[in-house]
Structures are given as structure tokens and as C-alpha cells.
Length: 167
Image 1 (cartoon, rainbow, N blue to C red):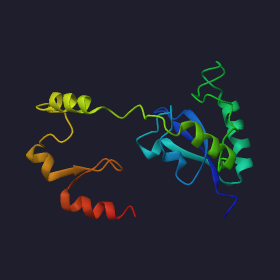
Image 2 (image 1 turned 60 degrees about the vertical axis):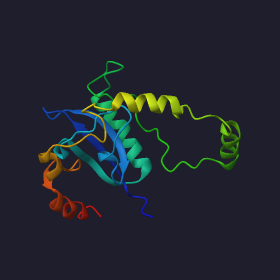
Image 3 (image 1 turned 90 degrees about the horizontal axis):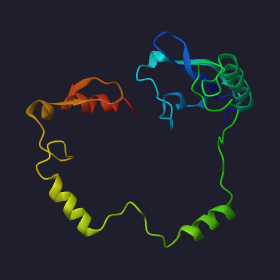
Image 4 (image 1 turned 90 degrees about the vertical axis):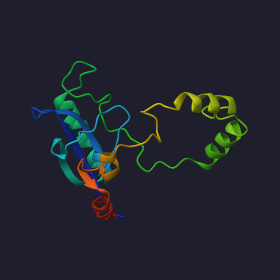
């Protein structure tokens, strides 16, 4: 495993100023974040420094955040919620905590499961709803597919070939 596999990245606004600074590894800069919008266009994702150790990446992330400042504490332009340098990369949950969580959560009813009555009522409500999943598609929609990755439209056959290039 290469210890110099980390990088520091920025998400840019249309005017070229950064709105978020982060530390990552592999495809982190292109992955969904909890509360930070990832740019749809790759030209707005910039790798600032690469081939860093994790410690070096943390240090540079802190430096960039301090340089540009954070909006939440009125020191700058970034939407970062922390000063950087935190993180749980590669965190392993200790076995005693896994056992504890297993014990306290076993036997609990999962809140998102619905009753049969709810499912039947919801099904009846969705009948005839044109926006419902499983609704009939238009002829144009049946012939073409949009790729969420690159936002282009393909015929069904072209799409199958296109998705093979991802693996």
C-alpha cells in the first residue's frame, strides 16, 4: 500500500474561487458528500496537491482552509464546517463496540418498514400517478437512455457498450 496516495482538492465556483477544500484518496473528490454539493462539471474540481501522506494532506488541507477562510465563522469564502485536519480515514471499529451495538440494536423494529395496510393504501394511491416508479414510459424514453455519469443520451444498444467502458 502506497502511503503517498492522498491529495488535497477544491470545488470551484463559476468565477474560479473555491467554495470547498477537502482531503481525499482515490475518487473522494468526485464522491457525494453529506452537505457539500459536488460540481457536476469536472472542470470545477481541482486537485491542489497530490502524492501526499495522510498527515501531509491534513496539514495542507488546514493551511488552504485557513488561507481562504470559512463563511460560518466569518473569516472567508469556504463552506467548510471545520478547520480541516480531522477525519477517520481507515477507522476500524473495535470488536467490543461492535458487540455492544449488536446487543443494543438487536430485536428492534426497523422504523422504515411499513405495515401491509400502509403498503396497500400507498399502492392504491400510486395507481394512475404518471410520476410513479413503474409508470409507462414514452416511446422516446423507451428508445434512449441518459447516462448519469457523463450526462449524455444514448440509444439502448449504445448505452450497453458505453457502460462497459466503466469497468
